[in-house]
Amino acid sequence: MNGADLLCETLLANDIDVCFANPGTSEMHFVAALDRRSRMRCVLGLFEGVVTGAADGYARMTDKPAATLLHLGPGLANGLANIHNARRARTPMVNVVGDHATYHLVHDAPLTSDIESLARPMSHWVGRVETSDSVGAQTEEAIRAARSTPGQIATLILPADAAWNETSQNLPEPIELAKPGMPDSSRIREAADALRSGRRTTIIATGLALRSAQLELLDRIAARTGARLMAQQSNGRIERGAGRVSVDRVPYPIDQAVQTFADTEQVILVGAKAPVGFFAYPGKPGSMLPKDCLVLDLFAPGEDPVESIRALADAVVGTDAPPARLAPRHQPEMPTGKLTPDAVAAAVARLMPAGTIICDESVSSGRDFFRTTHGAEPHDFLQLTGGAIGVGLPLAAGAAIACPDRKVILLQADGSGMYTVQALWTHARERLDVVTIVFSNRRYQILLGELKNVGAGAPGENASRMLNLDDPALDWVKLAGGMGVEAARAETAERFADLLGSACSRKGPFLIEAVI
Image (tube, rainbow, N blue to C red; front, side):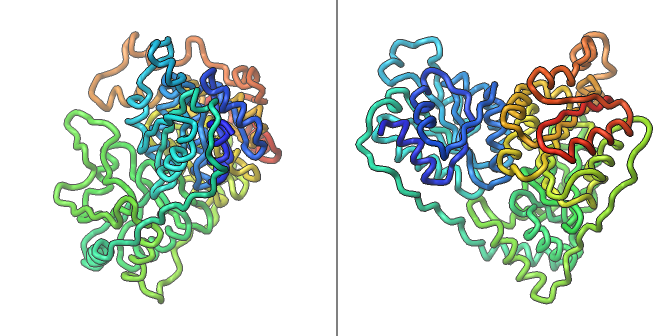
């Protein structure tokens, strides 16, 4: 074996069998090694942001990392925005970044860069391979870091000569992963005492706490103690729909969020962060909580979130807990007339198949989607987590590769969709079962609102030209067709429902441009 072979074998030995890739010259020996291993599925993205965003979507649905393959520092830099989103989603990911041969770095060739410095802000672990014999051990360290609790971003730098030189190492064995730490009894006791105190309490959850089994326990705790249960504003994955616990998220708008917590006396964070504004606004607070609000963490990083929730339920609810309050099945009336964001949400709620994966980068247009879909068919909800737009199309690709037997419906804003529009080509090439709904308002609507929110006034000519997308108007039907995805345009609610119903009844990629 050479070093590249050893890297492939180490990944496969540890159940990492998908590689999202955009390689270059320095990675060609790794490409050749991947070519010799049919167990590894290799998925090409035509931009590195597609690669890293797809790896994020894949891991959110499988709870295990994929590998990415990126070309030197500039390739990594192109993928950093969606690595940032993955980090905020607590997604496990192993990035393999090629570099020049060790002896070539002295020449400062055009693509030479400080890869470690580029990787470190978005990575929990960064390592560099020195020789082909050290490839296996370094890859194992990257996997351990990625699969720690909660998931982490690991970035492994692979010089070309470490890939092509022969190694004396044997075939790797699966590594033993560290188990998450057990709950801290003092934290559990403190949270239980707070819930029994009679003070107005909100439980805010994220991560594994938003899976059905944990949500049911938290809902029983809330029902017994009178606490309010919410999800934080941005979450990697929520299991929701009819027959599951219905939770709202912390609102995005500052005034609405401040009002939501106005009478809250204490907050128990279940893996979540205390709610703060996405941005600073003149004359408005940064924290959404009252100044004297008590904030408690149920568990610390590295502790087992599932066991912590069980321990709190044992302490507060006991064995005679009533059933959780599950959302009743509710399908809204089929919309008619003008096509609006609410009409899109109603049609999706009515037509989505059971087990659908909803990926949401609708930004402002889909803000009320939750309200309409509490009683829809059971589904998983994946959303933009780190605020770096351009994740929607790649996220849907990764989710579809992770779960080929499930329909994926993507709610995609038109402006942010253009950041990684190349992902449509991956949808077509991989024959992914993704229905993409583009909210075509032909403007950065959220920024027009933010211009007002920060007190900057009404948009003039220059501001309008920076925030509108109507000159020329984007033609998503042609964009999709050019990359091999069948597409159609809807300008009425009836036309949209017809297209969505047809797309949900068959397999394969389809795009609907919803002109709103």
